[in-house]
Structure formats: C-alpha cells, structure tokens
Image (cartoon, rainbow, N blue to C red; front, side, top):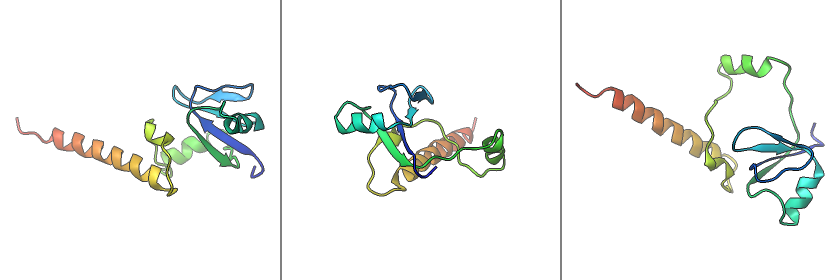
Length: 111
C-alpha cells in the first residue's frame, strides 16, 4: 500500500481512525492526523511512514520464531529525532546489548 500514509504516534492524540498499539503508542491511517500535526494540534511524538504492509494470519509469529525479526521492549528512544535513519535502531540495540551483558556478568558473581 505505497499510496497510504501511516502515522505511529504517542497516545496523547486520537481521531476516529486511531488504533491503540500499546500503552505508549497508537497508529492512525487518515489524512486528518497529518493536517493536525501541520496545525500544531497533533500528537507530541510521531513517526510518519509512507506505505503499509500487512501479514497473513500467523505469518509474523512464524517469522519471529525463525529469528527473522529482532523483538525488543518499548523504549522512549523511539520518539527521538534522528538525522540518520538507522541511529534509532542502533541506540535501542546498544541499550538492549548493554542490559543483556550486565545481566550475564552479574550472573557470574562468585558466591
């Protein structure tokens, strides 16, 4: 659906086509949100994406089980502004790696 504008945003905004994704994010598919953002009445945080992809039932779960996706918990880093497209993903992966490394090293303490 390359002709579709999708906006993932903070939960402080809602219109008739808004769907909650989690406690932290929602998604809206209509032009109204873009107009509200332009007028300064949109969500505090947002990411505008062109296009939309849909999975068949069970497809995403199967891809996750095969390790084709890196799944991670929510991070407010997602709402930061980045000039380089991959910087957000790099920061989230670095955060998760640091947490995993600390957990592993803490498990090695001698008793």
